[in-house]
Image (cartoon, rainbow, N blue to C red; front, side, top):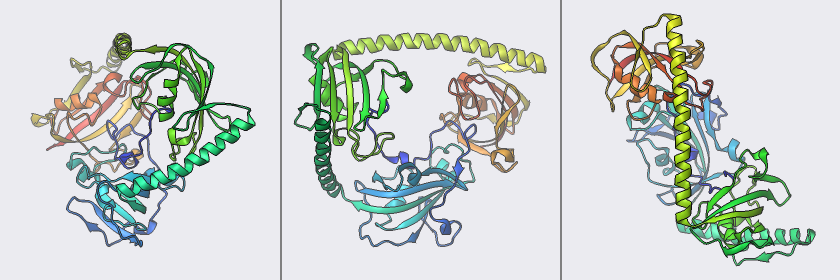
Length: 470
């Protein structure tokens, strides 16, 4: 139910990534530079945290953002000639809002935002190595030796109190606009709805039986959502939206938009109704494609069941247990099939490999020296990844994959879930200087989802070399 879930625009605008490893990721889109003159230019200042910055255009604002302040900005994140995030492309010419919080790691760009004033444009830089050293995770497609750059144009700065006043004023104005639009809609379509104190309009075509839904109870709902122009944007009754199943809502707990939390409590089991929800009780000024900014929403809904919190909990536990049982059976069959495929592969290619308890296989062609790598240590690797059919999908030794052969090692903290499970296990079998091959079933790699050029349920082969242990 992506269109009903609450939206939070926060540090996801420039969070540095959460992928399991740098390999097996799609290449980023070509860069569209917002500040081309700043690239490689002199004049950057380096902070103690390691973040470098340069103000390339000075604004006229007087106040620098502080923790709890609110800013609006345009932001563009890039690595080399590749863009990883561009707010203008995602949100058009509207600046994105962000609430200032304390920097979460050394080199956090938030530290740089707090040096700007409204009207400033700046570039911030941080080596990927510094991010990893600070305990961060290398973003998808980024490798040690590269530099992350943020181009930022700061539009406004408000204190929390100022932001609340501005928001309340804007909401009040929009509420009046929405109500006028709804009144015109009702007149045109000869609709005579009831209105709640908050501004929701509703009609009930079927009353239902029993008591109305209460806060904390779970309502099972069938619905179709549309815009005021009639365009349907979501439904669990239309297979075109790919989720034809009852939608269960824990009512009054903030898991859905305010208009639903309030509107459902007007209804009983078996009720059929239409809710007319002004934008302030839906997604507000935030665009949520295909829902526009300040979009008024209309929902045709039917309450098919109501459960108490205790009944809903038992029902959820039973469904979870059944789902787990089905998943375990599916995984068990997948494990057997992939193990058989690997054994056939070994026989065909005359390969002698050792199997671990988890189900991965490995072979070591060069032993290396010292002790095996241990969880918590930083390891540096060379690798080449391929499918069982021999197709190479990634390598930091092949310029095809944006690597400089022999000069682009891949580093990560072992045993910290920064890479796929097969790597976290397999690298612990190696010593410094070891060379070998991992044969990883899909459940120790990217599973049924796959990743980029890696298909779902794919067994992966990695030729690896452990270059360094720190």
